[in-house]
Length: 90
Image (cartoon, rainbow, N blue to C red):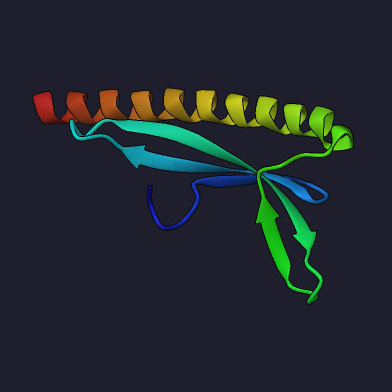
């Protein structure tokens, strides 16, 4: 994974962090990390992957939005690669 997220979606204490990755063949792919923020007993913010029942539908919506963002980004990546190939071929 890269150091900085490619994109982050948030709804209250819930978030989905999207990462841009490169495989061993140099191809780009995306992954997503769903998280729930909460305040610990010492007033520090922590992250958890566990969801309460009330979190499930909002998280499903965030994941749907993440899927749509990744799909759009992959199209953009493919278009940019095609344009690079066209410039290189000339």
